[in-house]
Length: 347
Image 1 (cartoon, rainbow, N blue to C red):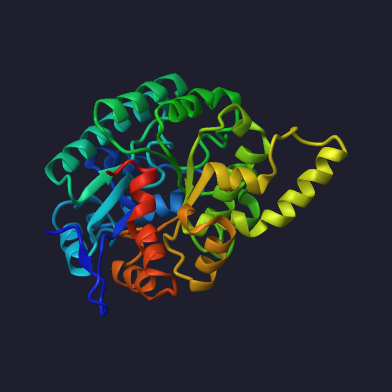
Image 2 (tube, one colour):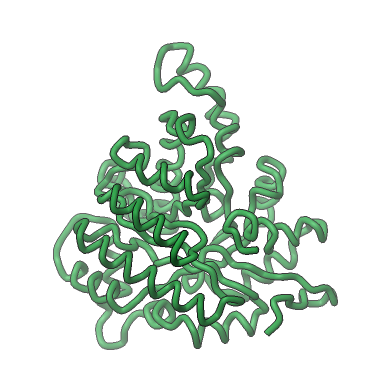
């Protein structure tokens, strides 16, 4: 199949690369099923139980997560998606003990490399790792990039309620910068410290809590000053940047005030400058023309990548959204594939 797909109704061709597309493997699914059967307060458990321990009928998502090469490829062909950038679905390996997490990350990365090897024109991949074993994580990141040929990394926000700005996790950031590998900072259930008010009304999940959790992680990376230590670090945020850049003016203003009062880290740049330098965003699960327009005007079109969030979001509407937004042909090419090719080293 050609990697150039006709854009519906235009006669033009465009390469569609989807950049936040989830999969799993049986080993991780079995381990998460075991986790789901134990009590706990983690706000990941409702999703984990719903997918991995849903009873005889099974989850409507699990089959699609496990089936990479049949139903997924058929869906891509039906909707004209040339390539998916695959990543191990949340919470990845981060709910397991460190040894188990390291082992499962290696298995998942090996599987991903094998799938890409069979379909190099249809799939790329982001490597998993175990943040709670930072030195081993860095070694696995190096193996994934240099030996397996994977295209970046994925981490599902906090690990044991801790964030990557903590100095213990700096080996992970150092490795990502040295390997020129973008870290896709993906949501998971909110950490214990912010979980309380989000337990009601379904707020803990994609409606609100996932974005609050991941945006908080991203702003910690900015406000901590860690991006002065790792200026070449590249972070990708899904769901239209988890809303972080919508707060750019206020963050800049308040950070200047905090610095004048002697609060917080001393930063070399403003928060909005770090966001434009170190972050890119995707459109996964946020098909709002108004939000896209604001993002392009605020960050620049070269900071925005198209994504579906398959299988949690349907492919057809995501394609129709990007086909229909009012941007120039050159901008649509960047959104659909040009930016992904640059950020994830796909050419």
